[in-house]
Image 1 (cartoon, rainbow, N blue to C red):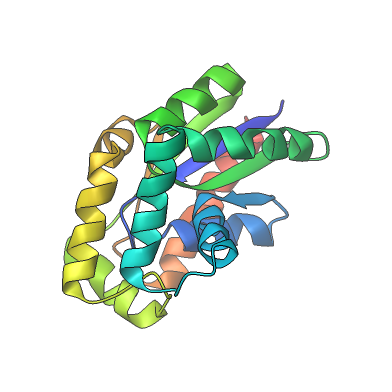
Image 2: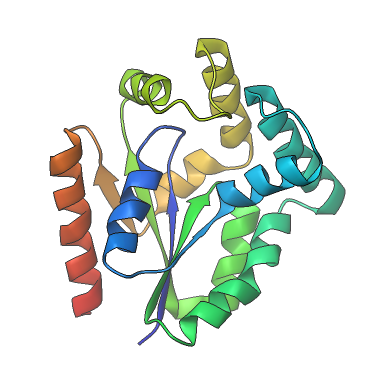
Length: 184
């Protein structure tokens, strides 16, 4: 049976690492964050931490909270034609979750990645993405994503993976989760 999984978590929690483990196992990934990064580039904007948040908020304000979800649903359906599992990386809002749930019903599930606030900030400093920044940018981003309903998504997720360990152990947790899902 086909499955669509959306992974959520606060910035720096490990969503990208989770996606990397699944990708290494042949699971196609559709990234909501990549959609924002592409939009920033298409508008010719400078890639600075506050710009990514402004673009994400602007898209939602202009086209509705569910804009990113609506834009990627057809791509996920295409991938389901050739794959039994597709991962949506970076679920951040309840409106997006509602679109996915309505679209895929029982074959849709969510996974939350949880990690301590300080650990997340340390990871963000180490990864050095253009949308990352200092402590103030981190806190602003946390609040913006909470405003979209991310806390609710994490609390209501079908599965939760704790990412309070080193990378190798977390990757093992992700692989274990994937094996369980594929066995269903």
